[in-house]
Picture 1 (cartoon, rainbow, N blue to C red):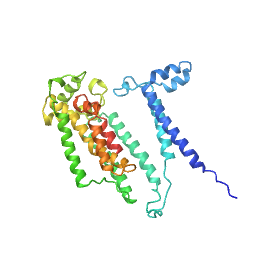
Picture 2: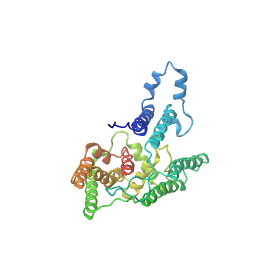
Picture 3: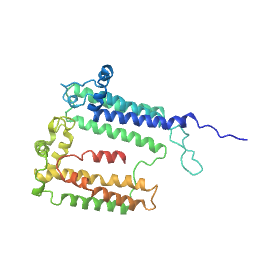
Picture 4: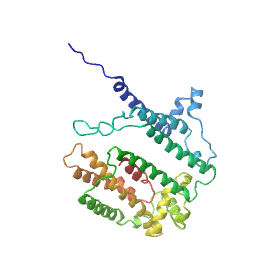
Length: 326
């Protein structure tokens, strides 16, 4: 007579840890987005309110725009990320051997990976913290240093993946590459059609961003890319810097300014296609067709078209989000 064995403690606590980690992250986001309702719930608890609602430095040029719950939110979200990193840690496996199906049995998570994962962001924050402390954060060398850190981190991770047989680079057939090139050109034509019409001459509070793009475009070499006090004192300068580059290339006018956001949305097409092709591969017998249809639906949806045609850089976040997911 046999009895069914109990599940291991790791299998029991793993979903609990995942749920708790995501719960802490969501709670941290809620602390940023809904500080006032949460503050009213703590009116009868002065000690807890003081711990969670420790105000930031109102005189600091960047921190003055953060909500009073920012520190508690960062701690909660950071704890959630740390918990997920531990819970989702892959078990070490021998290099090379494969299972019966020919797939590798696992990817080792080495001690050096923990050091790299922790030291790269911590070291980067320390470098830019010292640069701001010394008044050199807005220097011409800092954007290059920022890009170097991103590329170096990506290169180290890619080299490690290649050691274990993971193909890091995406592969496109000739038909896919030609389709993406033609699709991008056609999409840009759709977004740019009538872009300089009088109907788009003024929408809401766009002119503050237009003035910033023209002002920075007059001398693009001196754009303070890492400055967080751009338009209205709290919008980062980087989006306006991108628009300044575009007005220098396409013209110091309304069209040259608005085409900047059209280019951002068009640049989302290739990585979005790769994401959808990968996801469709699990459920569709024709993942390439499914991915192409998904790209058409996304790029021609109402909000995406609006974001691609207005000058206010509302959609500047879409491209890095799509590329990071890819």
